[in-house]
Length: 333
Ligand SMILES: CC(C)(COP(=O)(O)OP(=O)(O)OC[C@H]1O[C@@H](n2cnc3c(N)ncnc32)[C@H](O)[C@@H]1OP(=O)(O)O)[C@@H](O)C(=O)NCCC(=O)NCCS
Image 1 (cartoon, rainbow, N blue to C red):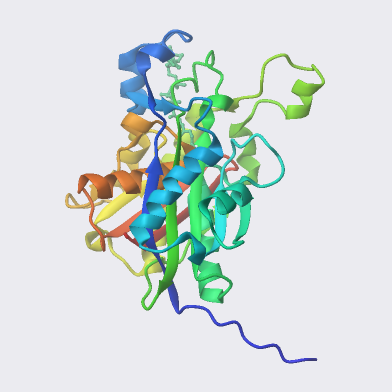
Image 2: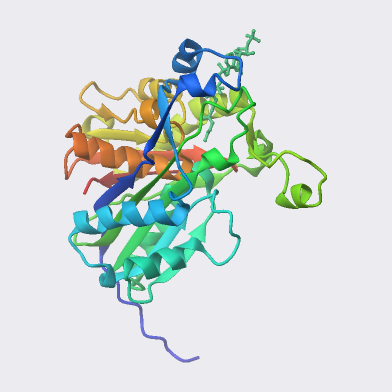
């Protein structure tokens, strides 16, 4: 058997820059009330959501990603040519092939970077970040661009009381690169496919094409079941990520959970017994649930507003359709 040369990567990886893009159209709860029987008070008290952004025709998955990525590249202080990998996590890019990551890699001016899409719902950012870290430590790329992007307004049934108010559009991006010390902890991740029916697309595209259904497919969910799972199981996963990184809640500066529902966030803060000094992302209020984009968008906003600062230690956890989850501790860029 021939002896292969070992791959030579960086000792560790870290997030070097972050960028976000929120569509220009801000949609208040009043607009949602045009199509469902609800109230601004109910939506705010049950979900925390006050407004969300919906993309226009020009704000495509690629266009929003390119905007967010440009900011992340500038924030990291690198050039696009240095990027060796582009990973896009999305469930709302409607062209099955090719991967939108290739278009983004080209338009950003990377030097033929490896580029691919992944589908991991609201855990997509954590999944992609874990892959990026592996690529850097393994040596197949020096810098990797990770993008979480969604146009969930295209997949929302505005007449469905259980979901019409929840979703928003946007893109968040980070540059992951080499580090001399650990700055992205071990990922605690997994899937529970036995619960795959709790959040899903109503019908396959093919049913719509053949005319079996006349309503365009949308995301549907069993709100209470998902809520219970998130509250009980995800706090455990978050704690496991802290343990894996060797961090106590006292040593944490920032908590960036998936922005799905503010009551889920409150419950996790309580179960994890996070001390007062920990800054908690509550971007859901003005962004809604943007699935794979939610964590990088929330991270970008906390840093932009000064609520978090470079070098802070942050716990991030994403969870959603699959059901899937991914949690890790990171040093903020
Ligand atoms: C969607 C969600 C906000 C609904 O809140 P909830 O408290 O579970 O609401 P329920 O579905 O139990 O409904 C409670 C009551 O409100 C009513 N209701 C449901 N939707 C409503 C709406 N949009 N407006 C007003 N009332 C509504 C119900 O009819 C029910 O009334 P009843 O008590 O008279 O029967 C919540 O379940 C949730 O956030 N789930 C998790 C979502 C999530 O995180 N998803 C993505 C993970 S990635």
